[in-house]
Image (cartoon, rainbow, N blue to C red):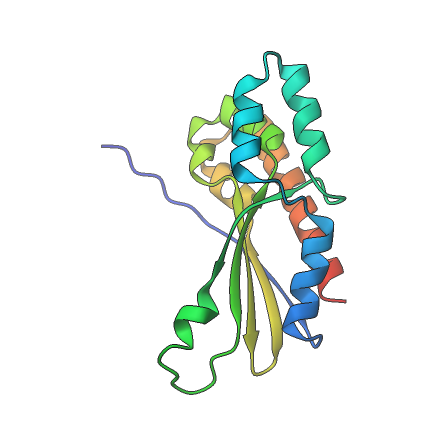
Length: 164
């Protein structure tokens, strides 16, 4: 058995904008491909160039796309106790970035795509993310770490723009 410890950094921005506006700003900057169509098109791609073009057409201006969303608030509000606002978990990423990391560190596939948590609290709407570089640092692969840091920068720029 092999065990790895991670020192993860959580980045969090807070906005006074309404929840739906923050979610909308993120939504405008990420691609929203149809999951089944994307999976089928990816399987049909015969070359990396063909796959790259397919992915580039699917990502938003941030260079990222949405893979899934989970409305955590919908579950939390079923049994109200105190202040429970809205909470949304977005799974976002870019398969081309993931490929580069996984080629260097296979375990990176456990962390990509990444999660952005958007939740409403008494002091505002929080947008949070655990940096990929924290997960990959323990593997001591400088190239994978550099790729993870580039991904972190993309995600953090997206978050920062959403909380304006």
